[in-house]
Length: 338
Image 1 (tube, rainbow, N blue to C red):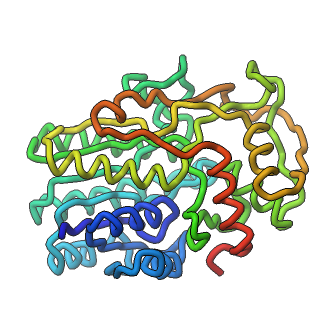
Image 2: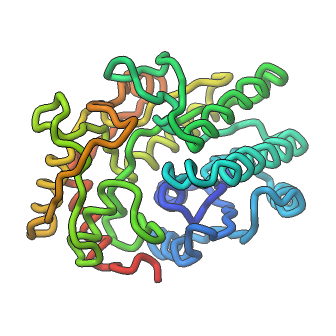
Image 3: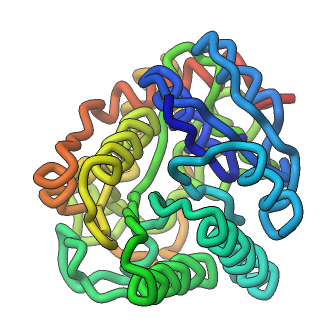
């Protein structure tokens, strides 16, 4: 069995990816400092799969614990999720974001070089495209960032490009994912933001469960079918399966370094997402229309042809399934993992 190190292993996308990894016969070693997550999520991954995750509580910036992980385990591949990821917070705390996200990656890559581990899947983001000039967005679109979080993803992609140029035995997949939503159909794991959610669907879910009063919609005068912003939402289970597809590609082919959009290739408006969620929970979601936010764009969705052609990956779940699974999770866990 192959051993995969999963950084930020207690996080939202990481836990769903580990379920898929364990079900595919991989062993998972996870590290997380639990600053924005809970060990309960790891326990529930084990409950879903009936398999053990070897868990290290620690910070990826800590050279000693990272070296310990590589020394104690024969790591075959690394999937790197660990990062601070709230766009709004990154604007308020840019130094913390640059230090955490970039420094942690440098420590990790240094350990990989030392221990001769060369397969690397990086959790990047569609935020690297900034404000796109046209849609659908292809991997060849120019990169730019409108916030420090997005900038850290661009910088890390550049670091990985430079690393590969210096040592082309590395094999690196950059997964630029669009808007992950949904939850595992068991309702045992899902997205559990601390404090007020930053993203649309967790916010709707907390309105539906009675934790928040109303959803504020920022602008209803965009050039879209109903005036609200359109985004590409992907089920987090599909996203986890996308990581398996990338990992298997690295295991069988030397790709060098390649970027892949991981989305559905379809756009849904805010009001379409609200309607799907109302159907899922059987109640009306109270909405308030506000002004547009600076930097927001009308429409953003992925061109997914490259992932389909080279990884054999196609997202299968639609927006209704995504909302059904979020409601199943939220209604069973109104306080998240608390």
